[in-house]
Image 1 (tube, rainbow, N blue to C red):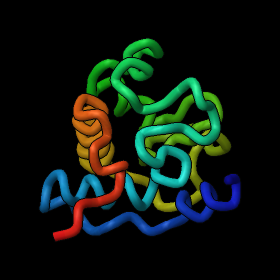
Image 2 (image 1 turned 30 degrees about the vertical axis):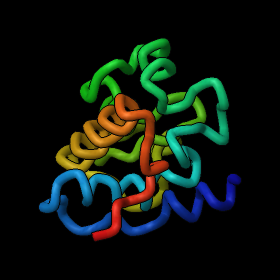
Image 3 (image 1 turned 180 degrees about the vertical axis):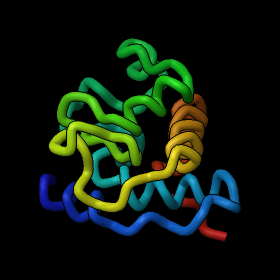
Image 4 (image 1 turned 90 degrees about the vertical axis):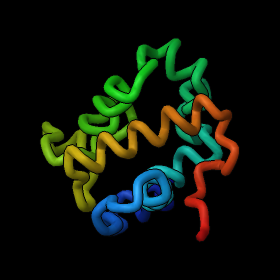
Length: 124
């Protein structure tokens, strides 16, 4: 799992999020799915991306989810441009504030819907 997570963390960031939720889904697939497939959590099983777990850990809305995407927490590295200290952040390409926001909104929308697509980007 650690190797897969490292490979995903080093994956390039998809192009700008001009397409909305579909692009946020692609961003989730590129950066998050190795650990959070289907809204789960392969590292800390009690900290899934379900609405109930997000709320119970203080991440009930997109702003709160964005803070953990930006700066990380516990075993999850931060993915935002402003993440520090460096050792707490991904070694791959960092996400812009707009990408963090789009990704946070996507996670909350998927959580509210029960992760119907398993976190995989919808194909068009």
